[in-house]
Length: 531
Image (cartoon, rainbow, N blue to C red; front, side, top):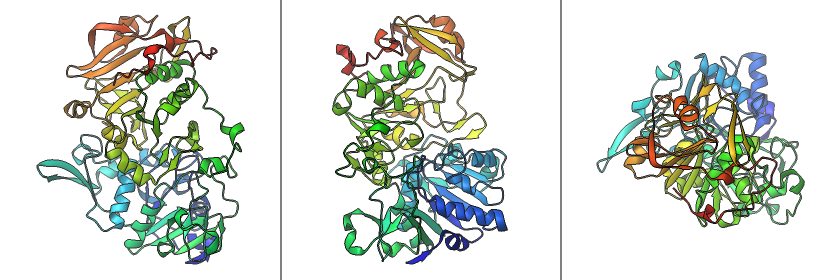
């Protein structure tokens, strides 16, 4: 292990290197001093160029940091990313075919790096079958440049069953981050908000004959380090960059409660005390979705509108009755919404994200609440390509295919929708400009027919209507009080859904005024799930 500066580390990056990085939106485990040094070298010299960048989770601040550091024409030629929204500049390069853009499920990328590091024949899994990741449906190629390139996967049959085999990834360089290391390069993430896939990223590079760079806040003597808190052993580490001003997240500083450290007390109470209760349409959706949860269930909440459900449950004093997880590896705790989604204050456990994805693949989630960008008559859902932008599925595919039941949460329309609640009724003050219930989704990130075949219950909740997936297709089962079913639901869909003969009214409890904190008034039936 050699101590180097960030500039010295950047000088070691070669043209054409395949670089695997770890991190998560909000700055979690983001080695941004190394990224910034590589960017500065490219801007000054034009090198390194033609890089291949691999990242499982979204990394950056949607402006300058994280993946944005690599988003310069000529600097990268290919990106394999799980989630792209935190780098609009990289999305722009993909949209204009300046790079080969591939999107794969976050869990697939992390687990593929682990399998590649163990020199196994890639990742063989059912995750991604019948979705945009299936090689028969594009194989994750997100633009014309990617579609013209070599595929990343193939279909194989084992025991008569179909699987996707994602081909091995052999990084020339891995860039990881920790809190501190000892004199032999053992890297600890003890004071980080997550472990993520740092070990898998490092292992994949080292076993491929590549190099591993680690950024840490400080160095410590071996006797001052806890062996059980080492995430990346020094045998895998080639270079360490000391970054004394390294923040824990983009919020700055270090908060012990985010790392789940004992004795953290209430140091972050003022910053993270309670999730913000959702308002407007998001509040209606979150309240209705909360009715689907039964006590004792293992629950996953996705990013976006589903993130508001945890706040509703907290106000209803029900969080302690369920087991929550998010794909970044956290179990329970006080989930944090917004740009820092994936972290939690005072988590009960912090696992490697690779272990968390194994948990999801094994059916560890009873019910998952995920967003929905587009929905069609077959119950297919698209979240991976919205408008002209490559978004990527993140953990959506891993979670939705592994969960015992799925609830999709989203507004009925997008862009400009103004929905208000008043006296237990819903009023649409302004319609959205973009329909979400369309003839055919742009990309299949979730397959309705596959869910039916597998016997997986699926519900779609909006602010004005609730649908279920049945053998007859999407079926309207509930409508909001105050809504004209024909004019404000059916006439604004590109297809005609089935209508349940016992079409019900959404519970008036879901339409409490935003200014009224009545979440604790839980009806008796609220704990009865419908999934």
